[in-house]
Image: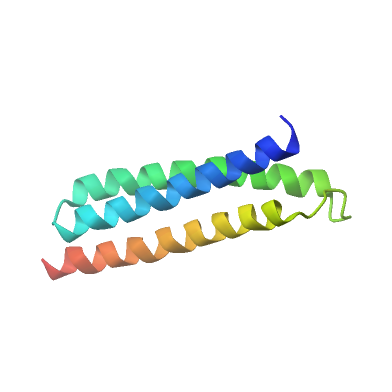
Length: 101
């Protein structure tokens, strides 16, 4: 897989992870916690796929600047970090909704 394809794979999986997390939150708001749990698991799986690509990038770069840092690469890294943060916060919100009911 070429670099641009790998970057797009990271962006797609990170975006899917965030989408699943927000979908889980909408189910939790309605008290459908089992469905929310399933979606959080899907979110984690998508994030793991993105993380695999990110780890490959780190390995290829070897901390020596071997990979070109492009705007799309920065965008991809931003996507993975915001998706992880969103999921972690949403998991906390789901717990709040569970304890409320």
